[in-house]
Amino acid sequence: MAKKNRTKCVGILTSGGDCPGLNAGIRALGKMLLKYNISIVGILDGFTGLIENRYIHMGLNELTGLLTQGGTILGTSRNKPYKMPLEDGTYHDMTGAAIENYHRLGLDCLICLGGGGTQKNAYHLMNKADINIITIPKTIDNDVYGTDVSIGYDTGLTIGAEAIDRLHTTASSHHRIMLVDMMGHNAGWLSLSSGLAAGADIILIPEIEYDIEKVFDELLRRKEHDKRFSIVVVAEGSKMKKEKIDKKNKGNNKKKNKNNSDKVFFPHKVPESELLANRIEKKIGLETRVTSLGYLQRGGIPTPADRMLATHLGTRAGEAVLNGDYGVMTSFTKGKYVLIPLKDIAGRKKIVEMDDPLIKTARCLGICLGD
Ligand code: F6P
Image (cartoon, rainbow, N blue to C red; front, side):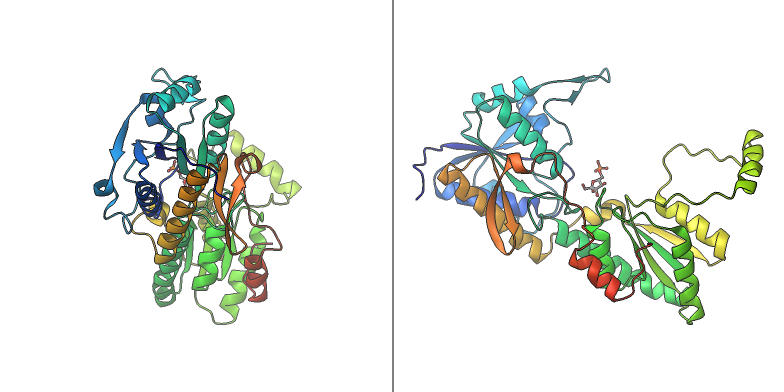
């Protein structure tokens, strides 16, 4: 039975990297709350806005036209209340300011749309004071623990698959190896699903350290079978297995490095995809190109599936407000919309397990996963 609801005012914020579908979630939640005469405060730029007391009042006008709009109308940041960066480069615990502003705004509940970091920050804030928090999972990476799928993932994978489709035609025309560098942080969901959906030949993910010799072998095997091009998806966090070092050559390398003759200095970390492309060209001489999708993968309009997910999760959060169910994340798990306690989620990540259907299916198709 629904608990008696006395909620008058709810705050909404978006935190972490933006993604398509956030606005659809804000819209669904907002429309539902307004229907129950609950007023809404939109906190700007994530937890930073809460600490700095920056916000807007949201009515039907502010919630109109959001369903298909990418990004977040509230703005976002990656800042954590307990570790706010200051101008002098130091960090400061501003949890007190966040809690003070929660009360100053007269909030009965704060709803945070965010990824894994946001779940942790929300839980931390909730434990520091008696404030009511509900979260909604979003990230193209799909690595939020406690939900099968997060807002933004379907759009990210759709953009990834479309990119591979486009690279296929140019790869086959030029007989090239095409490496596609995808986002995903330390999880392989986006790369595996986009790669499977678009027929990649090799998919490298953070969960499986890849053996570079296996990658060379697969590219050569394809060439021998008259496949004159290959598509290799390289997830952002993928790593190469340490190679066995030939002791004789190790000595020579040491000598070489001593006089700096072949040292190259890079101002930034070189992406794994660039390193791998370089090795492929050097070792097997196949012409190789790298396409990095970067922020394109989380920009633009959400897919209909993401709009639907955001609408369901947004309204489930609205229901949780009405029922006074706080300290929870709305989740879509095993075909059902459920509430998961934040204490079971905070600080955890959902990575691809080796028995996941994505891995099984990829292996059944003979896609090389680098192991
Ligand atoms: O979490 C989404 C994501 O796009 C990751 O895939 C990527 O590692 C990261 O954000 C990029 O972060 P930022 O926006 O801070 O550069």
